Image 1: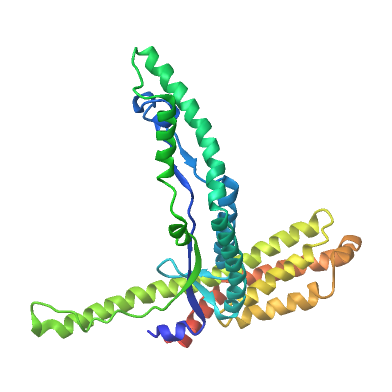
Image 2 (image 1 turned 45 degrees about the vertical axis):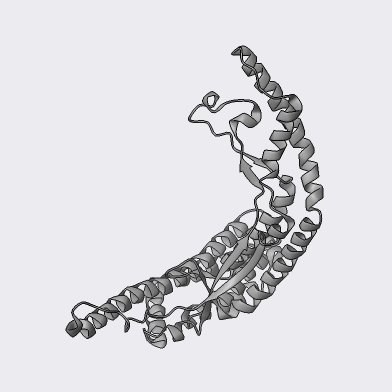
Length: 336
């Protein structure tokens, strides 16, 4: 098996994003109750140290970055990294870098206003502390007990407990990060393995190597097949939506969306799918490049032609024999 050949077709990438959530567990005493007042099947939830809308800006960029990777990659045979075809790599890097720049600017702005945000939240926590104090007093009075501290001491203690959860500005810098990591995969080097019975060492090493190769071969084979089926299924889904748009109400963007779906197929295709590419180009030339939504909507004959081509194209996309042939050819090309 030659992993080097496999990775001439793409790269393994994982996203590494760190965002300080600015949340801590809400405790019963912080709302003037004791643990025994909270039923076992209840969860008090969390309290925010920073306004929710501030953190939401970071998590929104995180979601965009993860979605960007998903759109430009396949789930790989093992591990959490994803396989990015080489035709998608530069698009991914360029778009990711833009998101990273936006993330870092947001980080710098947040750190510069960190004390302001903390002071704003302190006002809210002071109000919460007063409510907590009143609740605690009421509860103790019902049980003929005393608090043992003044209101001012209670509120200060309340606020100090919260302040302990805030990182310093220096620590905060390392709590936000957006990067991607590139990975390489290789068979494990078993030549350093030692055994009690030295005379059988070579045969045991060969046995382990063969076992590893068989396991990896099975996973990589499944990856190829699943990748082809995944990208074909996306074309089929796009065709189904295109057909529904043709049969339904007027849709001005139906043709452009179908074109986008085929462009995505070409970009994501890292194997030699010449059989299906003929059908892709035929459908482009005979349908998408000639007709548009207005023509289909006004002319029933054109509509019939388009629908017939959709059905023929869908049959090609669903051809399981061609998927098997592509997988076999790719295996041979990759020497696996």
